[in-house]
Image (tube, rainbow, N blue to C red; front, side, top):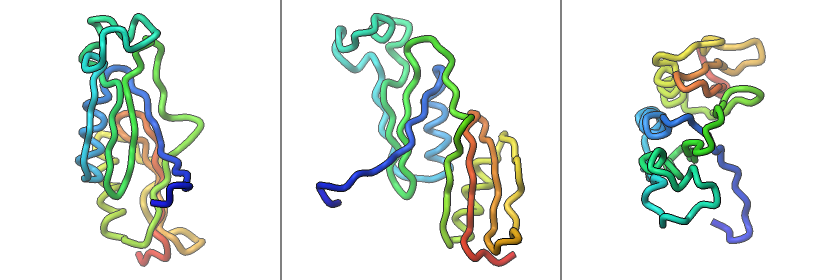
Length: 146
């Protein structure tokens, strides 16, 4: 990687189920999953006392899924509701129809398909799904043949 490059990676926040969500995304995308809990840091590592409390020591401070897809995430130690839905969607695009179809199918498990993955008038195969964790996904198969 160029040392002067900039990379944009999605960072998702969860209400205590980050481990479950990231293990699901590992099931969907494969790759390597690294999880660090709040309890693994020094006792006074965080300015917010809630992040240093026993209640959140087993919650995920930082998660990183690396592979074909990179996702970053954590549990929200502040006790406020974490929403990963509006006003954005994560978009998966490419020409590998089988792989993108598999991603769409797995993301749809216990999720809500907003638009089925079908050939569109502009020539691509496109679909939208909100997964079981409330994250919106768009999948585009460029030049897909259906």
